[in-house]
Length: 424
Image: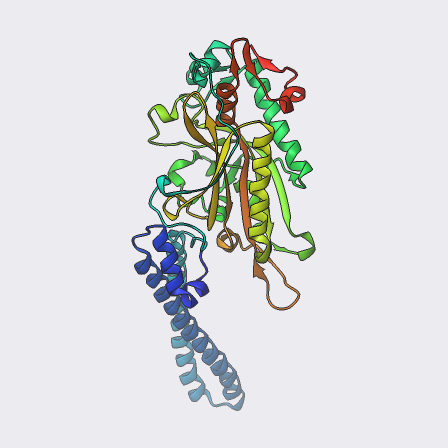
């Protein structure tokens, strides 16, 4: 959530940043925030003046009663009653104004970092670098959805039978590959200095608002209405919310956590060849890395997170590219996002497997997540996260890129984790 002080002091810069996102109602929404904030301040001033006058009259009434001047005391009592009615009215309107202000602020996305390119869609994203050699597959090479059927390692029909489309059943070597990848990613995160967290996979509404999934992505999350809980779309949500309403001592910074969870996304409206097989699922596994840092360190931290994710892809032997997302393709809460995509040799296209983002103070302002500098009042921290990694498209690329006549040859780094070197 953007800070009112930033909207007030840097109005033109905010509007220019939101224009990069093609946010059509930016000027009207920013002006609405500023007007509501001014009305809130005016009400608060009127409330405080009425309260102060009432307190002073109460003191005077006590003196008049002691002096036996009942007539004048009664006149002041009447004025006090009038002031109490004013303060009650002010308090009621303040509550309404503060709610309206909060809701208007929730509508505003984060302001993009200065390095974010302008653009409307994924076509306008900037390719930062491309790494690795794309494999040349033999004639008759198959896409992963045919390979998983050939080797009987993932069953979409069974998942559809017991739940619905987008909930596959992993079995045999497919299940063991899933577990191997999760353990490999977690071990690599721990070696890089991340503390492993195993969080809940359902969160309350406050957690959804804290990291910005609510109200922006409300329709994309599975909602357990009886208990008003949400199935998480990513481990970012519970892990970042561990620090909601905290003032973190500087000697605990930076905070670096990693966690594996299943992730749940409704993906309403998704259809077509681009979502076939493992390309898009309603439930999938992912290891997430999260950092909380002081503002001056956050972009160095983001570079380190991207480097960590690249290291995983290099160890898996997957060709990949790094993209800097344009304003029109960025997530609602992000100030800067790098996407990492792997090359799918059989599909002949790039598949997104990770996003690494710096949210600057946007989430921290919602979370009331702060630190106390040596001098001055507590300040908002910066939050970051990245997928390290999401499994489905990694598995799709591993299967397609490594297919041979005698089976799927897995990268050496996974052999000890799987207990086998090839599928088939």
